[in-house]
Image 1 (cartoon, rainbow, N blue to C red):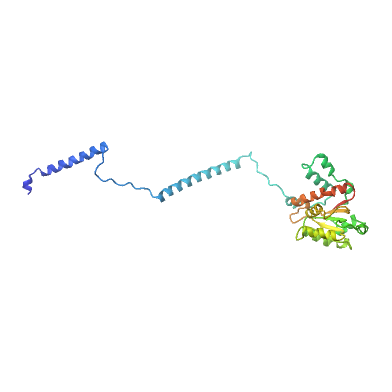
Image 2 (tube, rainbow, N blue to C red):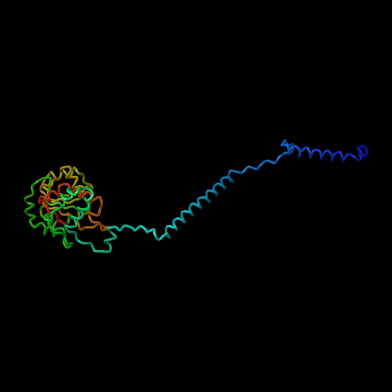
Length: 291
């Protein structure tokens, strides 16, 4: 069989292979498709893409943090930048010093400062209290009963002459309901047979207090400025028979704050003074004492 093909059979195969290679190269150069199978391109998985995106985002975040930190370090090293000082509270000031007893000048100063940006010069002058309306102040050696005996020596006579309903002859103003109850207990040695009423909002409705004041004669009222002002606004309490106004000025709470150091209480207290108290004092009908 091999003899029949002759010695040139392998030469023909070599030529055919060479011709095929030339055709393939020619097609590739001209852009024609070849018959040879191409390897499929491998697509990137979703996990790989997400991982790269997260890595890139992390690098950006680190750059931002590093830049902020550098800016803060630069600020802290800048001698021109002064640190903001923490504002001292009443507690901070008084924790290192002994509280001083209040006096008439303290109330005058508090009034002037509070209304300095709220009233005109003429209106501020009208709110100024005359020195003659002030009783002697507590020097922090008295109990409430001993102080009242000193500043109200004719209390028995005042009590007997007071017959008007819906009013009181002596009004004691303090900062809270608990303090009100405490002060009423301290009044036992002074009040005698005088009738006393609690004037605060905690657990007591306004209408109930109005009825109680109109029901009979009440000599002494003890309470908070907010509830007292509300009763005056509702005509449940009038100041016609009022003779003495005693302010629980020197007492301090756990934070060493006085009545006028507590913002919401101070606001009600100033409203109370405006609500007829100052006018009565200027007319010399009411005397003010700082306990």
